[in-house]
Image (tube, rainbow, N blue to C red; front, side, top):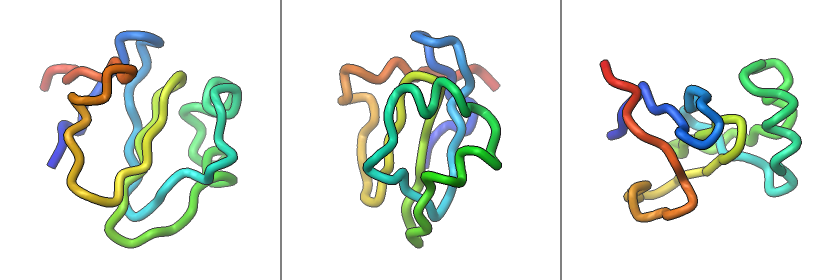
Length: 83
């Protein structure tokens, strides 16, 4: 379970999450920088995977398909955006 109000302190963008999807391996910084938060454009690099979750802001992205502590990933600057 994760906060659904995550915000990135690096790009000051809301972190979007997509249930049952992962990001294609060809995703890169420019893809997210140019296409966030337009879902219609993001779908081009989303792969359906039941039980997974794809996260992205404008500068970082992650695909999670197992229980993972995102706080241990030093390069992520995602914090709770307050409820």
